[in-house]
Length: 393
Ligand SMILES: [Zn+2]
Image 1 (cartoon, rainbow, N blue to C red):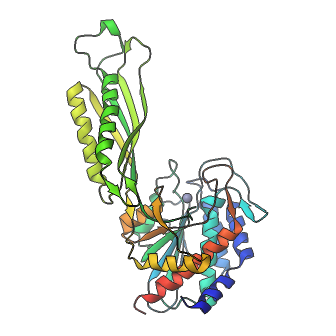
Image 2: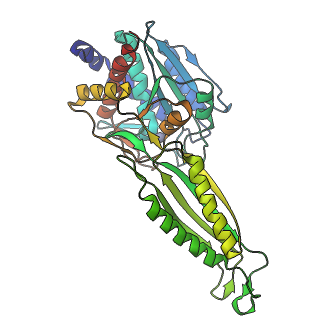
Image 3: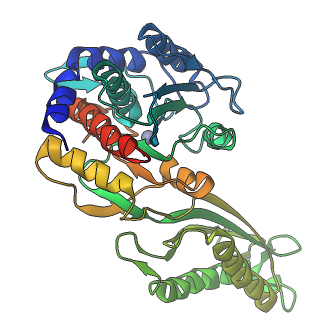
């Protein structure tokens, strides 16, 4: 990477301007499905910076999304910076800037990261370092579950608010997440006809829903053993896990229902339907052998994720990270399902999750060190310089 450009970009990141942006965003409460006011706030900040701001409704009129396209005017790739403006439903904690750290709702997850990529966008414009291509900035609501169902992101993707690649500033800084498992939550309801009945008064052949539930737990354990052979170098292996089984009222009464609750995780992208069908087959066999009715919900949180290590985004990112910290990030797994999984699955574009080393996500004590936000702004801007300018230039 050109040393002058690196120095220029790194110096152009304005810590005070970045902190002000983060504080303004954190100051506006935005629990999932109520991110309208903070989206307005972000749009005003970007507008005041001189950017042309779009507000696509994207299937969520309560809080239209925010989008900015910045074009170098020269051929090249478009790198997208995408973030969610909503926060989990916990009591609001106002912003605080103390001893080099920012505190408050969303400071870690992910308003600090959004402020950092806004600063990266300003720097790219102010320095004219982007020699080709452009930036697409998007921010939206409806991310955090179970309150949101990601409809706004899905609509943005459908409506073409996608770049050639995307970066997402979730709180993950110690590895480059090149693969992650897909995940579905299952809730299986096993029922029999009739009413609860005393153990000794049961009719002959009365179906045993609790026994069927116990058998399902064992079947899941056996499935998990078989699945352990489905491995990925970075993502780990497929699993089936039961975390809860509920049935019965008292010790000598035959219940009518048993509910089994658990997760299924998988490493191979594009296999959601196969995973669901395999589980369905297992349940149908169980229902037939135990004479019970079974229905189940399988709520997919996201497909498995991976990025091609040869993708130019990976090289651009590692170069940028090395310039800012002295070393590339080790390759590793993405421990959670995030919007990057959706971009990879639905838009078919490479997605990298990288943000500040922040702590306390999904708690009342979120905090992010300001130097981390500065670093993320520098890494995003430098990644864009390297990634966007090379194609077709
Ligand atoms: Zn997040």
